[in-house]
Image (cartoon, rainbow, N blue to C red; front, side):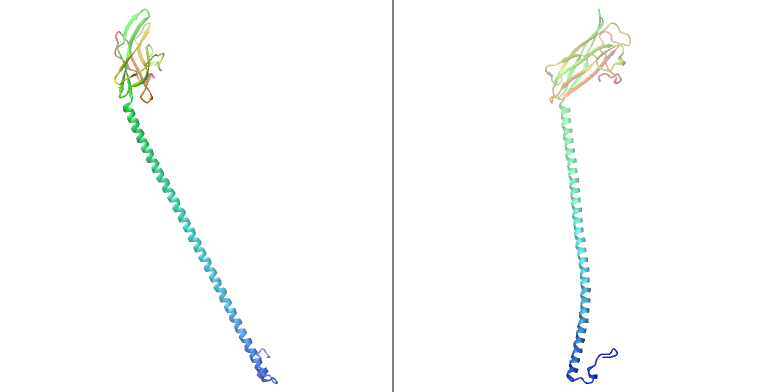
Length: 253
C-alpha cells in the first residue's frame, strides 16, 4: 500500500499465491468487521433513540397517571366537601324544624296555660266618708274576684287606703294593709278586703287613694300578680265614683 491506496497483493512481486490468498482473506475479514462495526454503531444509535423515546413515553404516561390520580383525588375531595356541606345544611334544616316544632309546642302550652290559669280582678266598693275626733275618716273595701277556669292559690292582698293632697307626686305604694288567705278562691268566687284612711282636713286637691297589688299562684305554683290603683277626687260622703289612676303618676296600674 502506497500513496494512500489500498494494498493489492497481486501487484506485489515475489509473493506466492498462498500469501496472495491469505492477504485477500484478511482484507475481506477486515472489511466484514468494519461493516459489522458500522452496523453495530448504527444499531446502538437506533437503540439509544428508542430508549430516549421510551423514556419520554414513560414520563408522559407517569405524568398522565399522576394527573389522573390527582384529578380523581380532587373530585373525591370535592364530593366529600359537597356531601359534608349537604349534611350540614340538612342538619341545619332539621334543627330549624325541631326549633319551630318546639316553639309551636311551647306556644300551645302557653295558650293552654293562659286559657286555664286564674285571673284575679280588683273592684273598689263603696267608701263611707265621715267626720270624727281625729278628723275625716274613709272606710270601705275592695272585692277580689277569680276569673278563668282554675282556682287562685296562696292569695296575698296588699292594700293601701290613703288621703293625699299631692296626688301627682305619688311614686308607689306606702304602708299597706296585708291580708293573706290560708286557702284559695274558686273561679267566680269573691273575697272582700277592707281598709280605712284618716286625714285632719282636706282641700279641693285632696283625693282618696286605694291601691296595691294581689299576689297569688296558679295550679303550677306559678307566681302571678294583679296591681291596681283607683282614686276619688274631692271625696265626700258615700263616695263611689272611683277613677283608674293615670299612667303618669307611677302607681300601680
